[in-house]
Length: 343
Image (cartoon, rainbow, N blue to C red; front, top):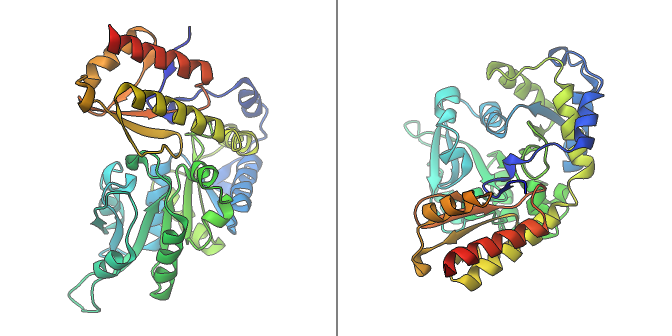
């Protein structure tokens, strides 16, 4: 039996069809904007999300940080949620590379209340920093794949526009958010000044992300990408995987969401505490406090059965489904955990 890996949707392997697309992709020098496959990917991404232009980048972190660099000036602040990926997992790069400070708002659900955002913007005093950017995350990784409520997002975007502050979306899993919310992805991101989404998570590509925005923004972001070391040459070989993913792997995300819900429901019946409830996308957290199980020990036992899970500590586990996990794998995982609890 092949290994069942439920740690992250970053662990997917390219399918034979995706590998074929990569092997046969026409390529050129992308620094000269001459790689036809990269150009196609960028155009396709911009079209799908309703923006003027796109920029292929090696990673989601680079995409987010290039966006921050492009939108802000050194000495400004960036307002974002306190558990967001940009703040927690991107190594303070906004400060190190762009010279800006995060101004965080801690929430229970990953949603920035408009009134708290207003209160986080300093008065117009020469001795206080300006707000250069607001950043949202959808779906929200540390909130268990929670989808940002559409109306609350629109309210925040309207406010930001009224005070001329750009808004960036860390949409690493925005296609998951679109499927779960039932809102077409171009409508979901309408009003943002820039959006980054990952090809290498639920969409199943081995590497890469795309940053989209206006033509003017992307021209500036191109400079930022080069400064960050992200200028690539015959990278159409990997961009082809992204094209294949966008053309073939978006609609099937619903399968991952259903698998996550089924696993979460089974674990809840076993006594795990599940967050969020109900499970919204392909991510959820399971807490073992009520059943008195050491999550790290459970992970060790499951590993021997060929099942890999991601404990955050001794009481919390993040489960993530993806295209390399099918219904049978979920059944095997449920049986293995149930067997461990009853042994």
